[in-house]
Image (cartoon, rainbow, N blue to C red; front, side, top):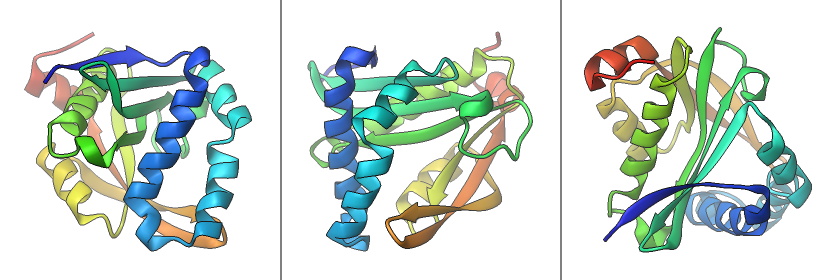
Length: 182
């Protein structure tokens, strides 16, 4: 199995939209009604929203490819593109999703480590992310990377509002551990 990393461009918009909806449904479909999912998809993953995000210079989007098939994707933000502004000079891992068919094969780890590598190449002080307070598997994963909870925020899906824990780690500690620096 060969995992590669590909920057997502505007001409990849419909592939991004398809994987975004599929992975969100696979991950959170059991917790949301179809109406809630559709409402979320029509706002967060509308072609207009995704195109705007792809053109935002403060956001980066990448596919993980397994033997040339799209297996997952990653969305990173800095500056004003971040979903929360609680940390000064921060790098957000906003979305990291892997199709169910590719889970357990190292794709999520590959994407996350690429995100951490990209964070280390910035002048940011913090790297952070949000994780659903009921997603225990993901919380354990991030804990292995020494991310610590520092706050929480609300995550609306349709009329329902979930709570996400906000986790962070200093970029300097990542650089020291992984031997990287800008």
